[in-house]
Length: 453
Image 1 (tube, rainbow, N blue to C red):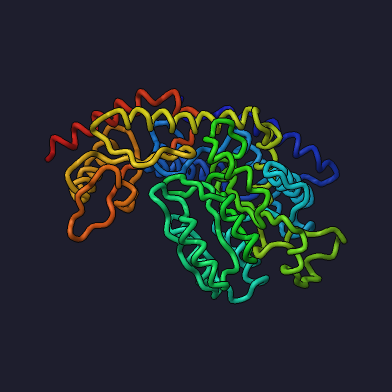
Image 2 (cartoon, rainbow, N blue to C red):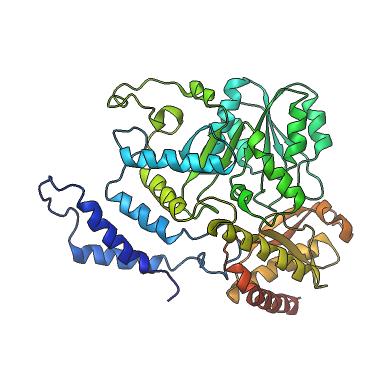
């Protein structure tokens, strides 16, 4: 058995309990198609869904795809029988309260006792809200993010009609402080985005230095921790990375994606503001929606309207089972992911076949086969990627600046300033135990690819 199935039994028991909460209602005939037709449709879906990479398995070590925890799956499914909408309390009383509690727990993980925040569809929407608030508070001023930050920041800035500028990065994929200081000196910057775990290489921007610049020039600091935020709980970060994470509470806003390391189904993002007063920016009037309670409705502090209450229920359930505390079970999972990346980096660096430009800060590693030029490296990388997939090892590809490989003296092709590399996101705790198997498959794939030269 490769897919977890115990959740189905747990869900059935919980569904009976939920049903008992509405004893006064008259019985209602089951809605929808008859059982045989549903069976046929579900069988067709199950067959078609086989056309996927095995994202749930440790041999999938490519993109940022992590299976949700069984309790998250069960809680999400259970909530859909009610199908609450967390826009207004009318549509989701219990799930709205669960959202408040879960969001407060995430804020507390970052050291914030007071905050304003909510869940949303994912990191893109969460970052949109953070930059929208920044634009409302500093109209027309520039948004800065590193050239290795997620592309969503430039797109969002365009949507918001705010000027955007990318800040160069150093050879470790981190925002270059000299370049940032020069841009800030111009006095037209409204917000600097510090990425805590770039999606490409897992690099962590030097947040303490960014915050120091803020003491000299007024601008907001937004922390995009969509991918790496939960690593604030890990005890095995380097001192430099730990120092950056410990500075997060000094930021103005934070984004984190529970649907990545938070073990949630897609989509579940979270945006947090350290100053609850920014809620005045959201102010709007919808009397037909907000009429049953004088309490704050979550829709009053969100750009989104209808939002799935099931996401909040699933997140609350997961945090109830696995509290967001250091030295806890959830933190241990993150530490195993981080250790898997550290050990795989050591294994690759010790093998003369590979070029390994960056030591991982979190659980993402990048490497490339050794060859004479950037073009040859990129070509061989693609062949290894294809050969690995045929052997059941699923990796990812990334194009990186050749300057990341400065110490390796790669020859540049006339038309190439970048090189295609292999990339793994070792975000499943099981990856640590599976490293020997992954290394074996990778070595076999490399030999297959070299034989094709």
